[in-house]
Structure formats: structure tokens, C-alpha cells
Amino acid sequence: DIQMTQSPSSLSASVGDRVTITCRASQSISNYLNWYQQKPGRAPKLLIFAASSLQSGVPSRFSGSGSGTDFTLTISSLQPEDFATYYCQQSYSNLYTFGQGTKLEIK
Amino acid sequence: EEQLVESGGGLVQPGGSLRLSCAASGFTLSSYGMNWVRQAPGKGLEWVSYISSSGPTKYYADSVEGRFTMSRDNVKNSVYLQVNSLRDEDTAVYYCARDLKSSGWLDLWGRGTLVTVSS
Image (cartoon, rainbow over all chains, first blue to last red; front, side):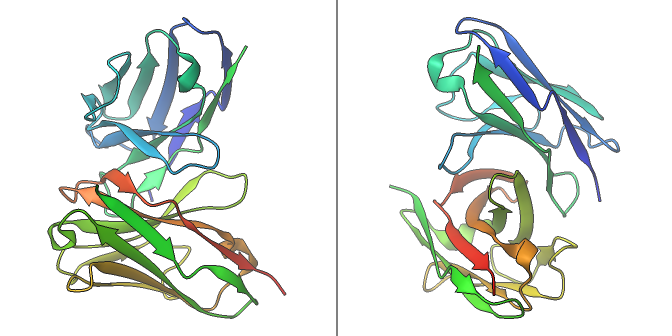
């Protein structure tokens, strides 16, 4: 199976900060990388698909980049509603896998 | 409004079985592949299974292969997950999720149903 590793596991930041979360795949997955946001007690929400495409309705402060094995999710200016846990997910293999998550907390 | 609603969770003893259901509304279920994803208490997301739009193609995570079976009834606008031989580590909230273009872009999720495996 393809293993997905996110860093950091947790992150403290302030409103207005620029934040970057990294996701690394155990093998090349081209651009088959998606990002999700999950708030406590809620279902995950798709933010970015195919590494860099913004899902409809997602604010433009979210962006994704990368290809092959290394990917990033960037939030350009943190808003209060962005404090949540973020997951990457590969869909290169028929057996999808998620990263372990990055919890973004208020500093 | 497009919506997925899971049901069928509950408390079950180790070795027991359940049938989880996911009812779709507001869109044509038969046009989409579907997935089950689970989340153990306080843990991350784990993909469990996928079924293609018409049903012949299915994939399972290694951790559930041979114990879980996914199915669908497009007439009833529902997908199902039969979970057998349950173990403590299967305790989780189980979400169904729509697979946009069957490319692994999980764009619509239900609120989940909790399965607790305990004696």
C-alpha cells in the first residue's frame, strides 16, 4: 500500500498567518493527491483535488501544489474558521490512503 | 440538496455483524462510485472500501478484506456495508462518501454512523 506522511502533526498559528502543511507519499503518485479539512464532530470536507485544483466553494486562500511524492497545502492568511485538522489522501492506487492528519490550533 | 445519511451502527460484541446503510438524496446515485471511510475515536481517517457506479468493481482496505462487503441498490438510492467478524479495532464512526468521477475526490460525505465493538 502507498503510505502518506504529513508534517507537522500539529501546528500552532495566529489569525492572518501563512501556513504550509506537507504531505509525502511512499512512492510517486503523480498528481493524485487530495486535501480535506475536518472540524470536531463534523464530516471531512474536500478542499483541493488533483494536487492543485480548488473545490467549488472553497476560499481562494487555500492552495495546493506538488507532484510525484511531495505535496503542500498552503493557507495564505489564516481565518478563525480555518482552525481544524487537515488530511491528505492519495487516489493513485485503487486502495486509497490518508495521511495521519495535521491539527491546526490557535496560538 | 445533495445529501448522504448513514444508519445501522450500534453496539456489537466481538465476532458479531452489522449492516450499515447510506441513503442518498438530491442527486443520481447511479452516476457515482461510492466509498466507506472510518474514523476511530480520536484518530485519523481510514479508507475502508469502494464500489463502482454500477456495482461490479469493489476494492477493500487490507484491514477489512474478507470481513466487510460493500454493495449498492441504485433503485433504492442506497449503498451498504456488511461488516462481519468484528474486532475491537473496528470501533469507529463510519462515513459514506461520494467519489466524484471515481477519481478518489470524495466530494460529499454523510455525518457518519458509530459502530462500537465491545463485550
